[in-house]
Image 1: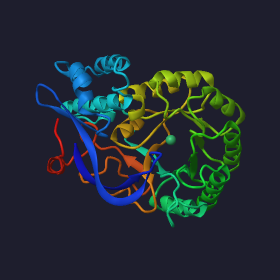
Image 2: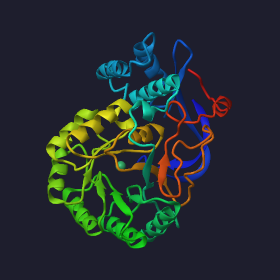
Image 3: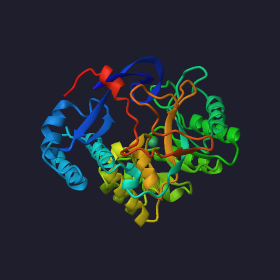
Image 4: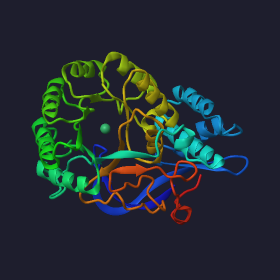
Length: 375
Ligand code: MG
């Protein structure tokens, strides 16, 4: 576990916003093979706690072949049921990413090639932070419009808005969400792909109102506008809207729950991110499932592992780059890395690193100098 400087703070609902620069903690999991080859993965310290490592990860991994990723992942999944919620999908994902990183480093190839690459660069969409009440930040529809123009100038060919949610005083407000989307469309013109990911607990009728407005604005997709626990609500909405519904992002159930969504017609595009579904392997399973149904699988979230998956599959249109805010420069490299894992060119493409493993250029000296605890 180590400290690094970050200018992002988290509100009471768990959404990140710009904040004063302060020390933040991050954990790096290291898996070492008998021949000394190592694999690394980063995660929140609360996700890969010492008790989780001791009680589950060591028991499953020690003495095993680190190349047997499917078996090791299945063994960890087996331990989940009896772990009383301690061994989470997010913990699984950190362990599994480190195994992929180790394999890539051992074989001296990037993980996206190990997965079976489809492409070497992926177009990115700029994914904004949630709305706020910071003057000149993301407080008004005009703020979103101004920021969208900046993002287009930076090279983004697509933008996803995260709009206002509590604890912002007036949120949620369907009319404000629609105003922000209209202002952005007006500002960037017809040729930029736009998506909305707003408040996650709208009623069916509010969701339908917003969805119909997005259709008029020619938005490319509508994401997590209702509680994802209700498949029936998503099926109800998807039947009535022409705009593609993307999901599910935040429910549990790995690839199994995604299969139920596809069968129920609850979405038009499936969604999975490496931390949310328990690793790179299950994310690839969701992508294959989507492919079998003739659907795209839009990968959720940024970072080296999600980027590797987007480059390894055909049926994902975009890499999600963010979260972005007018007060923050995403292109600043955090202290624990030598370079960003997802540098974007002026034409909006993220080029995959050719380094062995996940492609994170780790600054081991920085981490050693800022280590708080080792376990
Ligand atoms: Mg989302």
